[in-house]
Image (cartoon, rainbow, N blue to C red):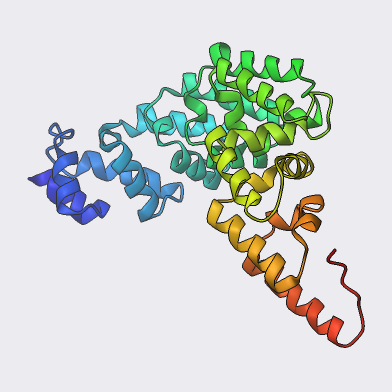
Length: 299
């Protein structure tokens, strides 16, 4: 009952979660051990929410020895150039890094930092993919990166894929090959400048959802060729939900007055926010048009 109450009072757990977590902490009989862990984390800038998130993922962190485990690990992170706030982001995004020996974690961080070329990109990577440091570099990441290079994704394109869609390098090899085949079947060859963006888009859209989107646009008068052509120009529009895409099409056709065929040729508006960009811009253009200042082409 001691740890149940401690987790409630000091870590913000509710009674049920505290009772469940306390079963993993039976060896703690006083506040000294867990207090030392909490004090260490807060010295690096962990707020209450961050601490709670970490402990809900791994209550056993309260059993770690600060001097022998946590302090050396965090110093190793700092030696890589990570600031205390960077370390907070790393642990929030990848809580298991606190439990894994830093001798295993540090080489992976160095690998990704070398690929991405900057600390800022590295921190963003942690935020985008919580499991990125759990993958084997030798068995999974490097073979996939080599496959991407064989597709011509090297240099800036290679970096772009990893920065904006790092999970593509962590896929099953057969799935990645299928993804490459899907892109080619949709008329985007490996030599295309859009190939890396197409792969990123297809990773987020299953074949089933892709077909559902095609049917949605068919209801607005697009043919399958129209849909594929729009995808080739702007693959990322398929990342929107069916509801969002429908709302945008209805707005562009019914409010703005665009012909459906006009949007098929110029699909960029489909990736813009309806509330933050399309509607405000339409209102401004409508005002200017009413004054005869501009002429809007919709056909």
